[in-house]
Image: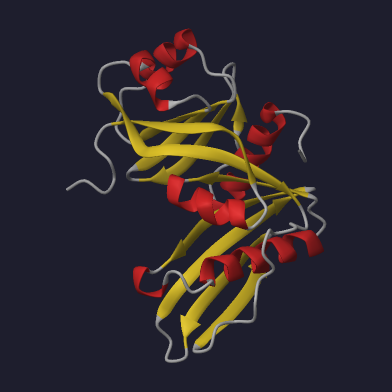
Length: 222
């Protein structure tokens, strides 16, 4: 494990995620961290490295405005009963995952698949990878933020029409290689159940469950 404990990995994830998204510097709080994000459906987030019922209930009782998120490293069935009225679980069950950098994947990435083009660039400590078809259609993307010796992978996705062609593997390899070149020795990310399968194939492992809760409607709701 590239981190001494889960709390250290959470700290790296919070700071790297904030850098990746251009959010405010995380503020240290009694329960963990608070980050101003500044989006209509994601105004701010509270991250609890060691959530308990009292802390969750206190935060969710006090936070009554919509667009406030809470992230806790416990299973959904544990977090849900702790939430105050007006809050609900959001985003499905997730996982906090980590890997040493450079990653040693279980399967080495092959060449860029025929018919695709890969472009990577770095600005302000964030490296982005974009895969397009030869005629410019979006196929896959991802980004990684380096903060000191750690890096956070973020926003990895492959368009449905281009899945199962190794593009996710290609993006992950490109991002983690770039982070290692910048001096990062440990990586951390938050994964969906679907993403977990990709990340495990590329050398990552689960550290803890990651569950989200939201005050108000999901941003995708109409």
